[in-house]
Image (cartoon, rainbow, N blue to C red; front, side, top):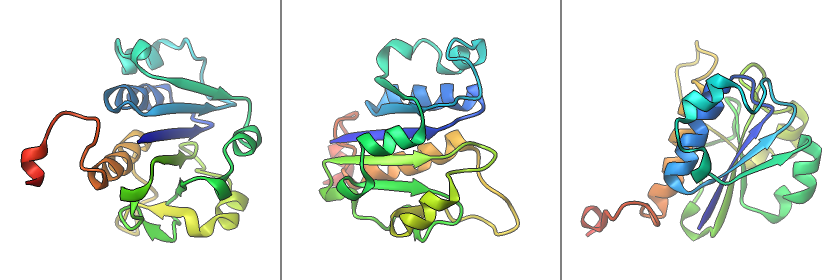
Length: 165
């Protein structure tokens, strides 16, 4: 199984560093879609990712359009995380999927509204109190990513077969 974490125009280096560290720990591929709100050599980014940078596979894309041309939502198991998602993040049956793309937008605006409308059936959300805007981006990535791994019985991660009988 291959999981892709796609960060569309991330703005805060510490979030991206934390997400890179999670990708290293899980073997997930990290996609960074430009423009970024920081330089890739930013000290905050490096510090948040600790010494895991050489353990994460990173692919950069010039813009969101070029990413969508290369990885077509119609042809992949692609999910768009948004507070306005049609489905709760645990509803899709990730169990039978060999490859999953999880897309997250920039901290201040999320993913582009036109894309969310176009792929409404592929939108997912994390339930939360309606009076708040959103969760922290790196926390959101972790919640959804580990749900996909839970569906796959944490395949490829630390041996935990005793938990599943």
